[in-house]
Length: 135
Image (tube, rainbow, N blue to C red; front, side, top):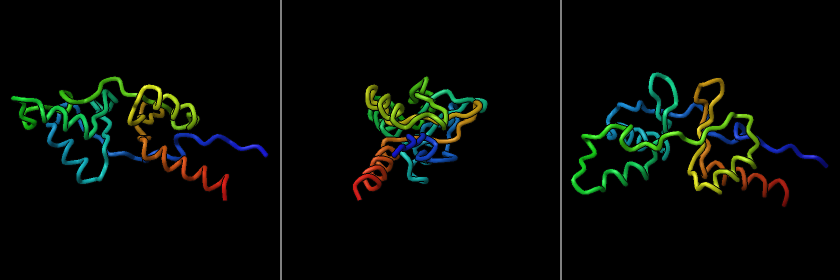
């Protein structure tokens, strides 16, 4: 029996919420809370320039003398986010994320952000695999 390795596109969160690099950091925090997500791709002029996570916001906001309201998303984001196409094999992406301790991969097709693949999505893929092979 042959099985096809699933792709990131099979498990990614499609049409993710994004935030602009120059927007206030408080706006990123508001969007994450409102939409129940922990990662936002960061765009500048429609191009992916980073990713900001709830952990990034919490870390920057906890620095002494730093007022989160005076910071932009660019001040807290991780630059050069791990990005993959939607047809990337799930196993390769998961291995890279584990090796580098990435919490997410931004899924980009044709220069456009089409999804986000997170560790939560990876756990959903694992659960699906276990159910298929063991039941």
